[in-house]
Length: 501
Image (cartoon, rainbow, N blue to C red; front, side, top):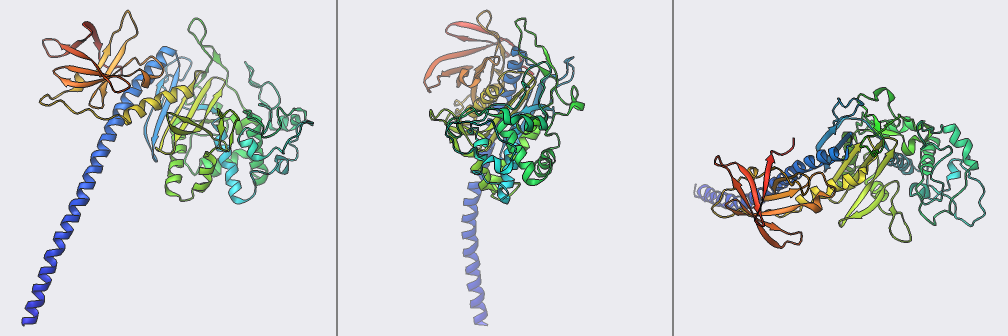
């Protein structure tokens, strides 16, 4: 009996110790979980504020530039966190653009062709440094007496093979854009001259990536379009992406194309084109929602390491620099453009075809991507980069501490303010616990932000780009407590109305 009592006492002592240890560990885990939850909440708030201003900027910039339609999507990790369309997609300007509007994505097509080729590379059916003629005996250009290493598949994928930019026919010439058929490309290549000895310089080439698509077709014994559909588009559930232009959707789900601005502010209509034999380089159509899926797949693959369409090591190799020009100004991966912007490594591609421009920017380190497409000829890559920089500026901003003893409702100050006659209307929005002022019709919105640090009593300290504390802005209210204007340098600026919808 004494032994049982002693054993029970020992067990009681043991169980008393274990909960204490577990409780300490649980407390540490809870503190870590709380800290992570707080960080996630701040990140979500930052993204919400960035996207709120991003939407205003995209729509105002679109209107001022008279761009008929823009669609954009933002990816973080393996999720699309925002996607939206702006403007209208039909000739009558009645059908709203959405994130599921179909556009020609032109040269973004090359990324799908590169992925298809590297799928065959993983199977061992092709080699990167093998001469093109090994797989395509008919792909022999006119004789060239200059000393040169062989034209290889790596050279095609990096645009360093010295090939002419285009295949036969002046197919970028309107109004009909007479793209060549596959048979015409094959028949005409022997009369085309090599521009440069291989591997000596960079020359963008639609012919080169077309030959990569031809190689995929040859070694797989499968028509190119069927190969891409079965091995890339269907597995990624990209139902609105096609290796051709869906003319039956034109003017409905597919946006119509427009040309560049005329002097009177109008845009000419651009006829629908068919890239035919150039499809592997420039013939795909897609939506920003589908391009977001394509970017999310890349983040998922690189993070998990689990093979999905490709091995992670293969995709990583495709995105690194394989060719850089002697002046170090242009660098290219296998199909992917590769460049640095604001200290970040960006990969992806842009597209420009008659009536359409598009951009896919991918930041693999931060797992962020932007897909943007529109139905006219403005700089889609520049717009996407401006949006990326605006989001990055908010995500990297340190939140201002609230002034003691003063509960501030930042939404009170938000709205549209008039700068007439000196300039266009601008907006004020909540930003990292303070305010941001920007003219949304202008390019480079991240560089044009004026930031206000809250001081209390309707006052905000202007903070310069270098973090310097400058003058004070004071907001004024009417008898009902509504903000009517603000005072800066002794001058008044009127609040015009709410934020644009």
